[in-house]
Image (cartoon, rainbow over all chains, first blue to last red; front, side, top):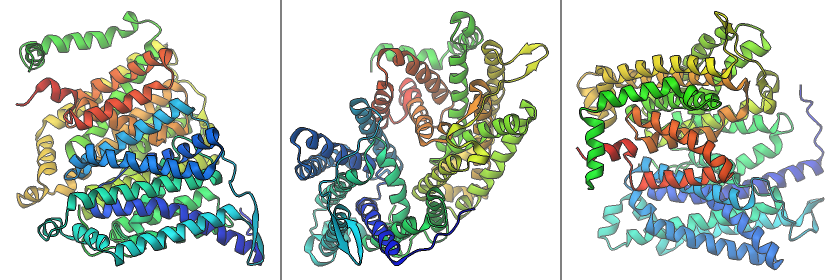
Amino acid sequence: MYEVPLITADNFVTYMLNGVSRGMIIFLVASGLTLIFGLIGLINFAHGAMLALGGYGTYVVLQTMDNFWLGLGISVVLVTLLGYVLERKVLYWLYDEPLLGFLGTFGIGLVIEEALAVQFGSRSYTIQSPIPQSTELLGVTYPSYRLFVILVGAVVAAGVGLLLTRTRLGLEIHATANRQPTAEILGVNTTRIYTVTFVLGTALAALAGALTAPITSIYPTIGLDYITMAFLVIIVGGMGSFKGSFVVSMIVGQTIAFGWLVLEPTYVRILVFVAAMVFILYKPRGFFGKPEVHE
Amino acid sequence: MSSRMADARELIRGSARRPLLAVGVLVLLTVPILAPGQSSLATEALIFALFAISVDIVLGYAGLLTLAPAAFFGLGAYSVAKVVVDYGQSFWLGFPVAIVLAIALAVVIGYIPIKQRIGNVYFVLFTLAFGAIVTDFTTVTTSLTGGSNGLGFFSPPEVLGIDLGDGLPYYYFTLLIVAVFGLGIYRLISSDYGDVLNATRQNELRMRYLGYDTNRELMIAWIVSAAVSALAGAVYVGMVGIASPSLVSFGLTGDVIIWIIVGGTGTLLGPFLAAIALVFTQELLQTIWQGGYRLLLGLLFVVFVFVFPDGLIGLIRGDE
């Protein structure tokens, strides 16, 4: 049996911050997925491969130019471009066929992951943290890099949230998701909206991959682990709900951070998956989903 | 359309069907003689072929895309390994145990989603979660499944003085099982039940109005598929002698989906042949370009999804 350790105040803050930083990474992956699913209805299984590419891109640039930030920037830009090309040239044709869309993105993801495995081998690479210092916060010493990840996640959440609720583009995305033909008639270029949303989602995945590299190390199938979790997060949060993906990512992050005190980490993951299965069956729109989900 | 393609079509569909079938059966019977030393590879190919058609019942005929076929395959493998290694019982007891457990698990997992008609997209995500749970569960419950070490080693017993632990007898044992259950599935799919499944996939609402209990029909397909997948897993573990987490992994799920798509969904021959061909291709490539096989497999799969969604069989049959 697992002994429940006593939690001191310091430990509590550390665990909570661990949960937040982990939750932020999950959120970056899940929010991209939920945007793509909510708008396009595409189960984008290539999302994880985009995350892996973001991580490996950062690694390669770091090796050659010895600059993490440059690596992060370059890899996010390149993966975003790849997302653009994929959407325009390949995936666009599959939007009316959800199952074919799933199979197509599954295949593309497989090709990318295997190409990474051929190029880099299936071993995992660790990346030195670009900010190795620690910061005093709430009475504990905490790695600055993780605080940076939390900051980036918060900025992205606020930024994309504002984009979706306060701008013309956000309105057009909502309109397209709601009634694509009506939006088209009212002058929205829905083809462009699809592209913008897909590319934005892909950029978030690449960012997540680059940010997670110094924390967890990278390996070719890293994406699969993340998107399985992310898919379940967006189910519980409500398909297509940006707010839902944020709230549930935070809950999952905290559950994993504190859950291991009472259970083995894998059991915590299993619990999260079970919760998601129950949600699919009894509350498929999740916490924040709209009454109507487009398939 | 090239005339050679048309010729090939004629050959498959027309008068040459029976001779081709006879040649196929002859090849299957004489593989160990034609290619000595390859019998374990041939056994593996046959088992995966049976696995592929069992999953195609659900994917191709019932139209439910599942991401957890490896869970049932692995359940079959682990049941046999558990019965033999941990409980010291007979190898043969493992088979009914595997099938009964698979049916029970299929009912538990499939009953509510099929009854609620959660829709294709949600079914994919539901089975994704289920598959992930099974994978995690297998690696974490060390006392039950041996964790990442797996459960092994053991070899199949002697029957009537023939040692099944040998590669050659085990090949024929596998061939027998695959033949019996493969033909069984073929009979099931060519019966009225197969038509009902096809029609349900195409228009479930209409089938309900016609008075069919479509939930029951889908449930039957789901259970049969799970049971045969588990059986394939059980035969597989007899060959390799150890049940390990790779048998429940998402990688195997991906493989079986690829075999089915490449072969042609909604056909039995296509996935059957594609699984055999790809297992042999993997072995061939292993010596030339290690690690490249899965990359090529991915590319092949993408080409089939985007260009030939009807698979090899669709290519041969052409537009009818």
